[in-house]
Image (cartoon, rainbow, N blue to C red; front, side, top):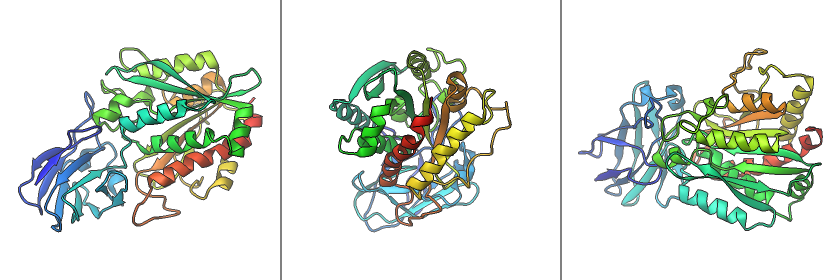
Length: 375
């Protein structure tokens, strides 16, 4: 028996692994940070024997309530990921699984590798409608990639879409894969109409360093990027610095920042009703977008989500509030579950790659509905 996390986005500490029925593990903290919750490791084991893997420090993680009702993911081929029995007793998280093959991967959510990220960028670049721009380098020296989709023109709206500020929220880049694929489909009427009226600035992965390092929430130096939008710096948050600089050059008529929520088993959006400039026009844009998204897919809902900010009480270091105020634009955070969509549960797979991708496709319908009203 052997356990390793020595690969892209790997994260686990082996405390003891002497007996299959009592494997003791811990999740490592993000570098220079107290955040942790993402895990991703590989088990070499005896096929046909039950393995009981206990994560001892689960209760100290960033969102311990997120373990309630959670089921870990497993895969033999790193393509098909399925849920395995998982229990949380308020202190430890225990995963029980009888492998059918000699080695198996386990993860908090389906990983989106840096290799696949590079493939996504290069594939999108092949389209005549897409231009690949290098915004700058991260602290670990990785590229911060921007895709400009559509031909910029004065009459067009400027729509920015970012994802994975929090690297452990890998569902956000699966969403982006679906979003980009449909937007670049020249036989899709929704995509064609959108590109007639808008130009899209898309950052599929805001935090490649944290993604490769196996972090939950921070970049290479322990910075939570989604608390840096008031005053980003090249020393702590170059990712936000470069994106905000480019936004100031292009302007922003709509902003969508894509995330995952550890606790709530729903897809929902969080607006910026608490920013100082919020008004009736802003509210109408939000309502138009939500109504169209509801009509586009039953995967989206508006009953469950975050508590609304009181007027003038928004956290202005958070991306959607900072951008919404700076550019007086429609600005949303979109959240997806780590667990499942409780409105449409899937016992075997929970919230999955295919559902992330489809939601990314469906959001274009909501964008089309709100596009004529953005200016």
